[in-house]
Length: 174
Image 1 (cartoon, rainbow, N blue to C red):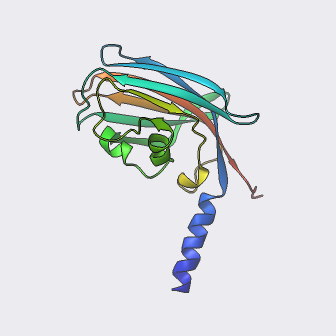
Image 2: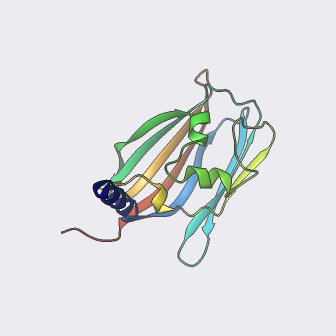
């Protein structure tokens, strides 16, 4: 029992080992026949940056709609493809417990984003500052570009957006 408690404390310590610092968000592409999207970046306070992202669906979301997440790490003066790559259905992504998604879609989005997504409702994500403890332990330090590509169930490209952030560890191991 003591060993289990020590292990759980160690995992929690790793999840608090780094800070996730948001730099900016951009909507690279969206299909205006499927949705309207816009994004603007601003300073939340003197030291923290955030963004406002608005989305309005023009069609019904289906269970087969997909999000592809790809991480690019800043190396040698450009973003290079790295280990962070996964695909999820939109339905599963909305229920995801990692990457602070539950707070992003719950308390930072108006109205709250839940499955099924409602057509013709303007969803506004505002004032999200990442909670580093909700990210997986052991994320590699550095600057990151997280590319998110959204597709319909029949593989039509709906939207591409990029989130730029930095992961900085609180203690340096030398």
